[in-house]
Image (cartoon, rainbow over all chains, first blue to last red; front, side, top):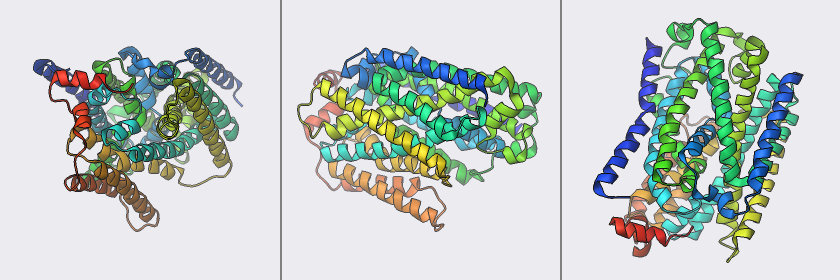
Length: 34
Length: 487
């Protein structure tokens, strides 16, 4: 069980940078920043 | 001596050298320094992956997992993720500055040539130490896998990576990284699949109790977990060999995308490395666990043809990190130490000086590693840790406050960099003497942050013209500011 939790949390944090990139790009497009 | 593995190793080295010679045909300094600022996502992402995964990651993390099991994930994964997030946050501003080196950014942002030279010398010094440690890592692996004399293996690897980095600069480095990322991912995932098959999946579903815990080794409790998260999280975004790639990126989406997509690939490979390590902990004798676990597993348990791609993966991990480090050392010496004192240096001069510096530093670290390999020095990994703590303590505050806080001043940046380094070095000495037990990055970074904020609020601001360049208030002003930047 512990190992499954480790794998799931590692997978979740690995995609945080991708979501952050999409969020920042979306915000810049909306506010007209380059 | 395993002649099959030796032949494969030599064949691979010749191929990688060929890529370096290809890069040599590109004569421009822009190609050497920042790959002509044309790096797309297809090259940038594998380059980030290959640079991130070093011999210390592959050998060290699998060794850690062979002793402490899945606690290796608590030790690495979460802190690495914090580092990627901070890198991603810095990507846009560094890319848009259109500068060439990290010390140059500090010099221009804080209007201080002294800070630029200081930062460059610190980076060159600390990376030289890291290079020696990385070369020792490959020496140990080659000795175990091929039966090659450790000193000879170090010299052989040194000749190859110094040659192609010196000849082709970043243009060659990112192209060899592309090949090396594929070899690295292929070899590591193959070994992980082999371990899963050999253990019937129990490495994940039912590992032995001592290998299946969240805590173990350096991470005994939640406090240690947070501590190591900060060590990696603050250390990673101050490493110039990642930050430098933002300058080489074609646009902002490439600068960010290499981290965003690279993070997913690195995490997959990292978890595979931990699977291998835990598997080694279950399959090899107790005495062989630790740093030598992965090479031992490959040589004595896996064996056969499967050992070949894994050997190439380990070699690729070393080349792809050492070339990025050496490129930074040579280039930063030329641009941030030589050029400010040799006014009006032309691109041709800078290219020549960069190549010479790359050759001299590369030869020096190879010889140093070869020398150290014949004189066993205990705690070599501790020497490597100086580079990590020293870099974060010196550069984290000046870099991130410089990027995001208008009020950060020149005197504050200088005191922050020097004060952070001094505190880190003193804490390292106290730790070695057994007086304190925490990582030197804490006093280093805390002193650096306090000095940055405290001194900034008491000293005069940076000139308005420089501020407009780094903090343009409107999209139009930003465009004008960036166009006037140096290339």
